Image 1: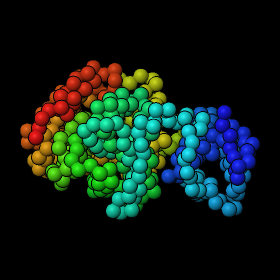
Image 2 (image 1 turned 90 degrees about the vertical axis):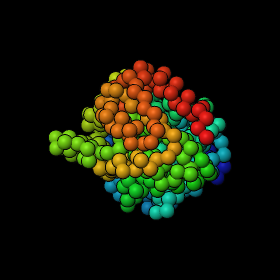
Image 3 (image 1 turned 90 degrees about the horizontal axis):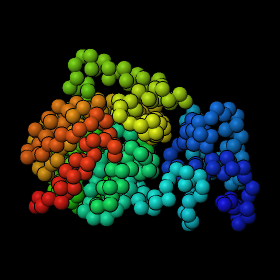
Image 4 (image 1 turned 180 degrees about the vertical axis):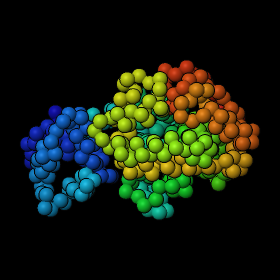
Length: 386
């Protein structure tokens, strides 16, 4: 049982108003869109905007705010709402917060740092042991990934044997969304900021998909910081760099699809990306990723991030990587060609390449390659490479 108190006095509010208020407070670091509130509070049911407006007004009234003052709950025109009041967490999570974070979220501590260009980046620390820093990739969310049927098996396993540090790159997740620059150079700054803020002097750097290219760039620039490098499902050249004319046209079509359909209530547009990334996923996993995409990034930011992914090229940096490197890639990866993984391994001096069975781009616990992935990564992390 939970209640809202103001100045020590209990305030009576409807459950939906209470949940809405808690959701805004839990995501106070960013603007929450109308569609996200509808998805989260009403579970995607059809609700009029006037109903949402009435609940926002009731939430304001409950905390002593108003639509005119907007001291605590601010309306951001054409974007959504944001809780801007000062928050001090002194008790356990409320029911609505627990709906979005498992009870064992205490196992990861979420922190924030600021980049050189004044962008706030959210990062988390979980587990104990040798430090592993996971680079941000296309679409992350520190809270949702931690409990996701797509990511949790990997993240929790890594944190069970290591100190796992990971972050949401700018433009998505819990990091700042409203940013002037989303570029490969800015992604490198995000990684540098987290590495410095977390106090890691030397660590294993772990890249997945787009995060591999960022990890390669960091390892080449900061060889003194990277003790080992693990790259899974990666590529050194984006689609627009390596692709044929037809592949470039397909990449452009995907950008257009994202621009026009990403933010719609109908998940059919986002399902296109889910089907590519997880062709062997279960209905639950696909639904989770459909929802995650909408929660993690705005349509505009999704397009900007996708363009960076399509145009990056770190092939000239491969030879400059000095850290012992393990490269893993699924043979039938439906998103990034197997040949791209081999190219990375061939370009990094002394890199070990491991081919995995499977066709999902994001490795699932049920995938045939998952046991071998764990075995190879564990062996690599335990190896004496001094």
